[in-house]
Length: 385
Image (cartoon, rainbow, N blue to C red; front, top):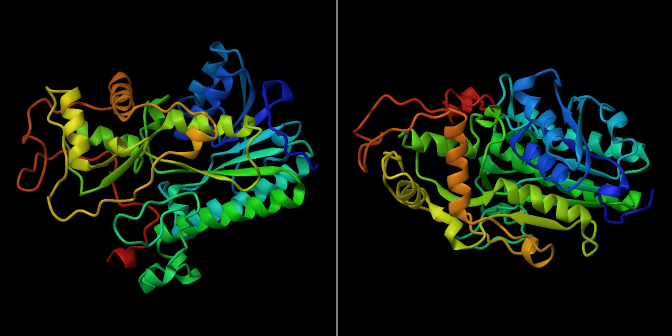
């Protein structure tokens, strides 16, 4: 192989893994809008709920979409789809929110599955660029409050500051989903850079934080996804305290295409996909205030119970703007388009009312969460107890 040149629409097809997912779907849409022939990898291409919106993108153009069935857990499953492709956008992952998931499966879905993806890329003989959807979980590390994370940060830095039950050991991976995910993503990133170097191609890592924005399918209202948590707030469901670092899903997708096309980057470069500026680094109560201003008739929920805050993770969007020329959405556009898409799909029922009427401590309205409708599958019951 030995070719790491940028890719473009005239260089043949590109493949997107996890195309039915929230980020994956937006990557496919962005590529189609820019004239690419996209091979969209999904689990079951007959499942119209998850794939219908992908096929419909053929009506948009100027690019095109074909659906390919692939299983992330099976070696060699991507061999055929990658043949003839100039680039691969690897967005598929095991998040831990599927029935029967375990922390170990989360780790394997990040690291072990990515090793198989690299083998299929090697077997293709044509792929010269890989853009890997990692996570800010591979960036954020134990640090003092106020620490600003950059692309030089890795989640296993300052490990001595972590408690014993949060160390990156195989034992902890067996029962801790957060450690399993962060370790799996970080190890997968380092692996793809090393393997790409050996192959003479280029691999890049994209590390998004709290991704929200418009849903392209009703199936994107998924438990434990940030876009779904926004919907909970519109329905008046108060969550525990959270500090948000918001990035638009469309900016995540656009950045990935720009990475693949850029002549100014090299194997191993990472890109934090985070808030454009401090307007997107906000406490949940500040997010609530923005949403209430947008939807004054809705009793938007904030936090269930007030208390002490830890303002982080802190990280500001830089490299995608300075190196790639990304023109990011404003946080207001991102929030509004997230909510409006949920309303358009009929996925949420707004709680009509005013400030103070939402569900919170001492004001139980019996509202159910769509973000956390039941116990998280990849949680060890003994640990939770």
